[in-house]
Structure formats: C-alpha cells, structure tokens
Image (tube, rainbow, N blue to C red; front, top):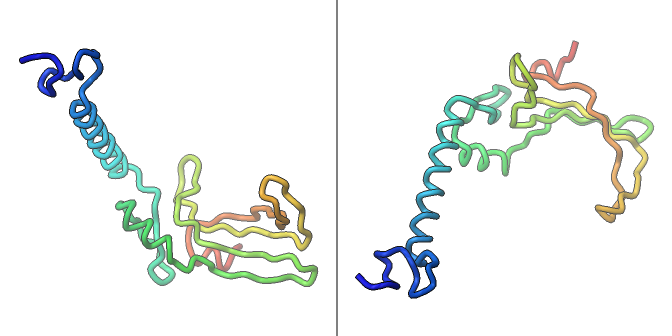
Length: 143
C-alpha cells in the first residue's frame, strides 16, 4: 500500500484525509445525529396537529412539518372598533415552560397603530400576547 490511496485514509503526500474518508466520516456523523434526534423525540414530544378541534401528538417531524405547512391554524380573529385585532391561533409546538399540560393555543392583541421597523423595512402592528391555552375549548371559551 502506497501513500495517496483511499485505503490509507490520506491524500497523496499531503497527510490530509482522503476525500473518500472525509465523505464516509460525514455520512457516519449525519447518521449518528439522526439517530440521536430520533431517540430524543421518542421521549420529548413537542409537536402537535389539529384533527378537527382535537389536538393530536405527532412524533414524526416530517409528518408534522407537512401538516403545519398547509394547515388552517386560525381559531378566531376579530377586528375591534379602534382597528386593533385580537386573534387566536393554534401554535403546533408546545410553548409550556416547566411542568403542566402542553400550551398550544395563543391569543394576541395587535394594535391598530403601525410602527416602521427599519430592520424589516416595513410597517408592522405591535402585538401583545394576551393568553395561552392547552385545548381548543379553552381557547374559544376562556374563563
């Protein structure tokens, strides 16, 4: 075996890893990362979708992403007299920090006034999160 062959793991005379060896290591690393992520998602499910008004856990990230891409997530939206808007949406991801049921719905108030945001180069309405809920029923009929 001479130097510069893929079997030695180095390029000809440079001591650098051969392209095949680098590619093989990259494939192995990608596979290990994929397995670790899959194992973690078995124990931590933070992805959900709506089937009608029912919340359903979705362990598969690709299935969830495909659903999320086209889903109608608006629960309700109302424009107030002053031009402000209050909207409730299904978030699709658990926003619970700590113990308790998953927090999956959010109601936000968007002011009637617009403010220019230089970073975005456009005007946006200011918003404030008013409340978060775990179920469709709570989001539609807050107490």
